[in-house]
Image 1 (cartoon, rainbow, N blue to C red):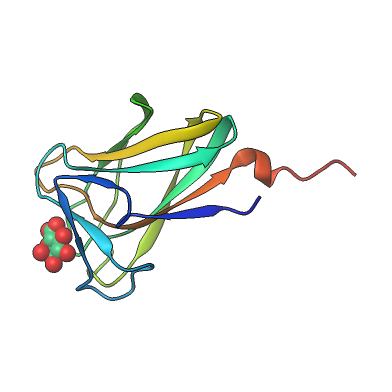
Image 2 (cartoon, rainbow, N blue to C red):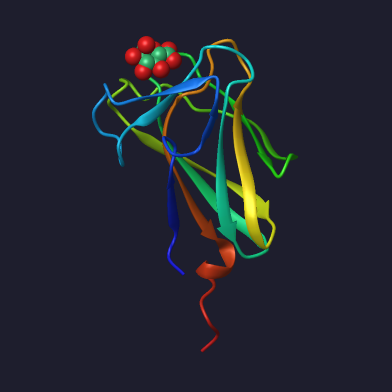
Length: 137
Ligand code: GCU
């Protein structure tokens, strides 16, 4: 299967708002995390069981790195992943974490861990590692 995109603006948002004032996003907008510890975006993702490469498209127009902790179905998957400044709020970058997913529906949450909140979040792209496997010849 191809990688699947999940927009941030249609995910579950706690302590953040959907905005569209910085160009370059996909879909209809992006999430501006509130500037506080604990704000999060949570995507519901359908996947096969096993590892998946999970890519966040983000922008950070400051010079301060904005870390996120990642959980899957409430279980820690990746801690302290850093989202550095991208130079402008209109400059979008990607960063990938590998997470272990369950078969079927998964709640993938990216939670801010500093008072700056998270980077602006455009979308998540989920690519199960099993999809990368080249069949033996
Ligand atoms: C600015 C910017 C927002 C961003 C915010 C922040 O207000 O316009 O898009 O989310 O800074 O620092 O988080």
